Length: 347
Image 1 (cartoon, rainbow, N blue to C red):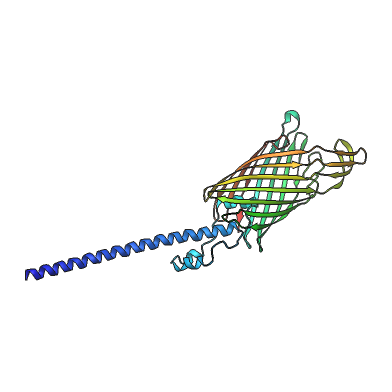
Image 2 (image 1 turned 135 degrees about the horizontal axis):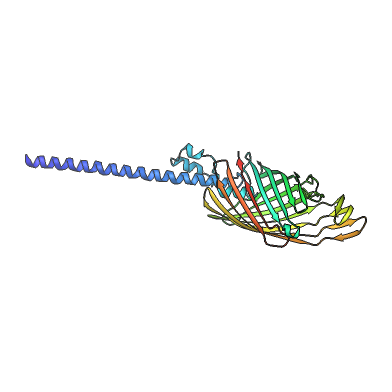
């Protein structure tokens, strides 16, 4: 009898032990499933980011979304809103990464630039307020339009008014992959609608300009390296203005010189919501050709404008970001320094 009781007790003990072990295995499997689900969610977010950087073009391997859905991630993960990162916004406001079709961004901005000094009578302070609109279009295109208001204060006086508006169209030529960068081509037109461009304190350039740019971006997480080259051609026009080019009443034709620019830099994603940026640019401007009815033909000297720039981007919310910028001239023809602030809002 005692032997039977002992055998029965031992059997019950083994069954209980097996139940505990089985429960442990179930808990372990649940933990593994939760971990895999978290990994899948991160993959989906990364896919969303890459698609946004590629201008809305699909970058996920065929069938990946279906495999992730079958793994238990759920429709809530697949329908996550597009992720906005600081590096995305920083590159986007530069026109290096285009908006997906159907997306829009409005960018109000303020800037201040300073050149020269009152001591030698060459001081110029320029304060600009601008609004830029960007719209993502089909076929990997983006439309950009900008309208600035300018106040300029100089040693000779001051002036204010609407400056030259611009409109541009950009297209993604190649999508970034492991072996190649993303490449964007853009064309831009700047009108000569600025107020009193030939006054003693001018507002606006005074000549319409057509420009083209080719830019490239390559990511080496957490760094994105970019570079661009551009060409700008101002159109000649007949000009009649008092006290222009050392003539009491200038009358003639002015053909401004073309400008070739190159630049590059790097953006560092400190966190998804914070990004720092540094860059260098050089612009080589040919001298203007001038035909004066009173004094004949002449040519102005060439100029080289070199700038070192630095900036930071902060994501304030899913739609709103803050972009800060600063720069200093590194050549004699460049402005001494400038500061800028922008608040891109995406919808």
